[in-house]
Amino acid sequence: MVFQGEFYVPQDWVQWAQILGLGVVAFAGQWCNSRSLQLEKAAIVASMGYLQVPFATLFDIAFFDYSLNILTTTGVILICSLSFVNLSKHWMFSKEGPSVWSRLRLWFMNRSTRHQMLPQEEELEEEKKETKEAVAVV
Image 1 (cartoon, rainbow, N blue to C red):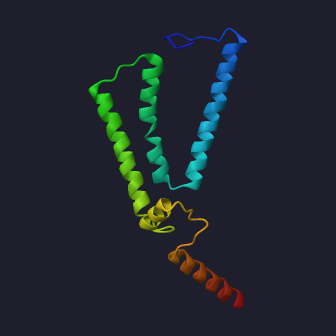
Image 2 (cartoon, rainbow, N blue to C red; image 1 turned 135 degrees about the horizontal axis):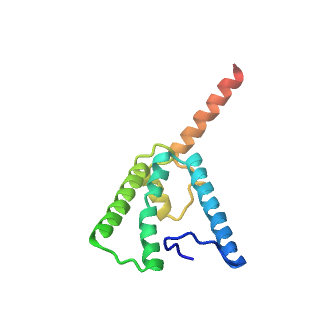
Image 3 (cartoon, rainbow, N blue to C red; image 1 turned 180 degrees about the horizontal axis):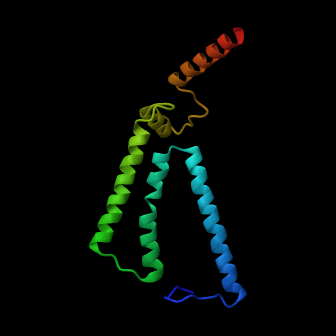
C-alpha cells in the first residue's frame, strides 16, 4: 500500500484497519507532543523535535531501502550533536532544584532526590514555611 503516484483506495478491511491504527497512533503522538509543550519549556521540547530527522532517516533505511550519502550523514550528526549541546546547556544551567554536582553525587550514591533533601532544599522549605506563616498572620 505504498504510494506510487496515483490515488489508491483500500480494498479490504485489513487495509482499513491499518489506516485506522495509523490514525490512532498519529493522534496519540500529536497529543503527547502537545502535552510535552504544556509541561516543559519549549526550547527543550523543540530540541527533541529535531530528532525526527534521524528517526525518519532510520525509517527510510529500514523500509524503503534508502542508502546514506555524505550529506544525510553529516546532517544527522549535526542535528543530534547540537540537540545534545542544547539539552545539556539547559540541564547544566538550570536554576531549579539542586545543583548539577549534587544531582551527580546523589546519582552515584544511588539515592533518590525525592527521599533525601539537600541543604539548599532544606533552606528553601524553611523559607516557604516562614512565608506561609507571615501570610497567615496578615
